[in-house]
Image (cartoon, rainbow, N blue to C red; front, side, top):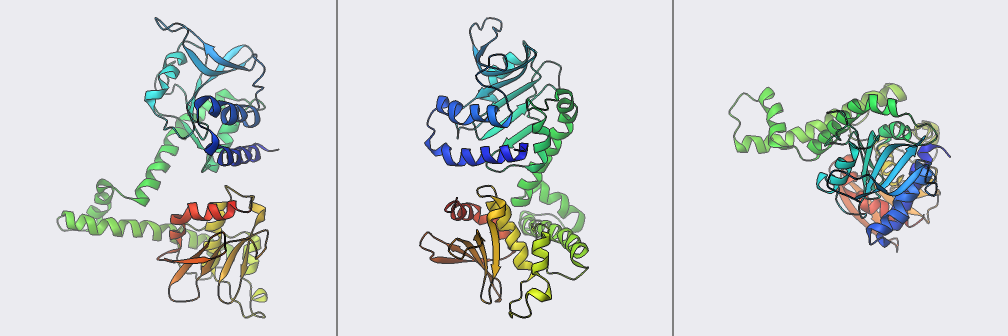
Length: 362
């Protein structure tokens, strides 16, 4: 099994088990030890690889323990401090990591609640743990960009020097991406002012700032849509397509579905907007169900996202043929609720409902 597949399997286990986990000890046993064993590949029952309740006396603090120490060739390489699943992670509950980091040979420290893993090193000052992580893994929403770096901490291909050398860039790129995502969703006054001051010559009052907050958010989405459009044009023959943000490139399978041969005879026309929406839904639910099980099927009145290509396993319906676009969410009794969409990216606002629907068929 590839590293990414192990990570996806672990994410699925966390989703299934975390509601039953009530204590820190249960978190360690049911979530964190399996992560160390199956994802990172260390033998949790071999004290030459994983030492639980690791002790390294620090100053006046005697007998204080860190939850796990990972060893290679007899040297401590990574320290792991655990909290209960669902508990927020912060520097306040990482004090032991700070103290232990500079008295051991460890270059990597990890703070985790079994669902989120924050990895730290000593970029800012030698032998002193940084206050900000260089890598954040959220098993509820895995960032594919960090998977290759995380794999370097696994037993099979452990490459500490490579991790440390790329940690600085990774730390700030990840932080900037989180800032961009937050600003796109809800821009701050300072962020809005940067753009407003470059296009508006008048005095920026609170009313003007409020108006531009909406305009900046809309412009951000349209700009992303433009970039996606350019890539779609190149991929599908330089056609003019309707604008929409947040869509992924169609797969070859999806591209063939847009061809005349598949639509003219049946009288069904699958639009690019429907395919963009399908790929958004697909991206949302692939974290809780295998990607190869997700299918689409178009009809004259609506476009369906299905599991196992079965009409008996619908996730949602897309009603895009009229003036107003609707997302159709179905409950367990297959009763449909239609939700209007101002733009296709609004589908992301219903992530939980879509994942809940897909989970019924796991």
